[in-house]
Image 1 (tube, rainbow, N blue to C red):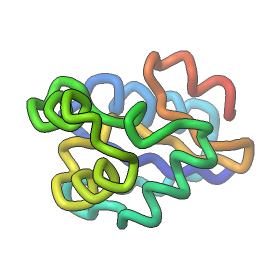
Image 2: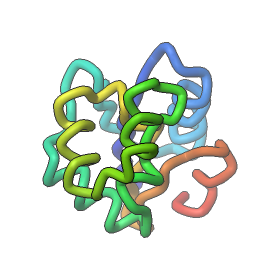
Image 3: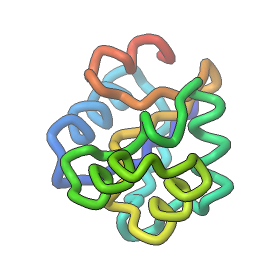
Amino acid sequence: MDATIYHNPNCSTSRNALARLREAGANVTVIEYLKTPPTRDELARLYARAGLTPREGLRMKEARAKELVAEGAPDATILDAMAAAPILIERPIVVTEKGVRLVRPLEKIEEIL
């Protein structure tokens, strides 16, 4: 199985998701999204495939994410903000042939293994 993970090595959930993919025998492509951020269009596609809105993909621990929600920002504005500041992207996002998941909690990864 091939898998892609949008990964932050400083995040324990992301590290655990990567370990689970490897444990499952996946051929994993690791994208450190803070160094190589996805484009706005790529984010939109990922969220659509995961059945999520961009708002649901916001990392709410970030002050700017809270501001966007408080302002009632539309999806287009949220995607623009994420593309400009990838720290706003909640992680990890995992892609396999079975689908896309925002792996929070970690157990969500099992749905696409």
